[in-house]
Image (cartoon, rainbow, N blue to C red):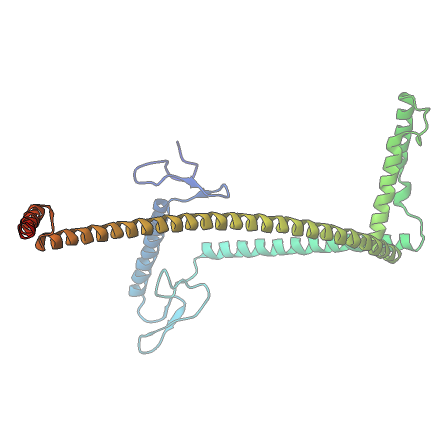
Length: 317
């Protein structure tokens, strides 16, 4: 893609490429700007060198626009033309630069004059319009109403009516009628803008319209307010319902958790009870063993009983 004229190059490695900004103009590249600045600097330096050479030739006297005092120092003049950014010394105005400045001044003055003329013309137009409005208000004949152009238009409408089979009457031609209504409307509008009577009438009609409009507005706002309230109420009810459902679910969950916990407790209690019973039984067994009250001690006791019975028998016999 090639660059635009005066842009200096297209998309090279060193150039960033000419881009368009949003307004559709061209944006100069950084490289081009830098080159231009460099050239200007070199030009300024060149000028300064020439000036220094001239000053070497002149010993004493005037230096540029400033004067040299007796001690050899330089008095600088503070003119608007001097460019301190380019050269620290005071530079004389080049005749070409002076010419450019004169031309710019002339253009500026010309533009100013044109602006003033335009302003005057507009003022004149406005005044004329105002006067016409006033004349109509005071019942003078309206010149614009009887224009030959209007007559011509009416005739052409009449002819068109004849052609299209409307009896040749301009009144029957709908287009003329609408045009006439429009023109009267336009006149009325113009009068409304200018005349006091029309202004009063407009204000009155406005007041009436505004009253009706305000009433309509009030009605509309009331309706909207009611609708909004209904919608808000519905929303609130939905919200409440959702909240209640959530709470109910939470309650159910908590109840189930409680029941589970109670069952767990019951089971633990029963288990503890069983363990206790087992311990008790074991203790009982150990006690019986210790006191020889268990099964293997029974034969020993029976033997004792048998001996006792025998002894009783012998005593009895």
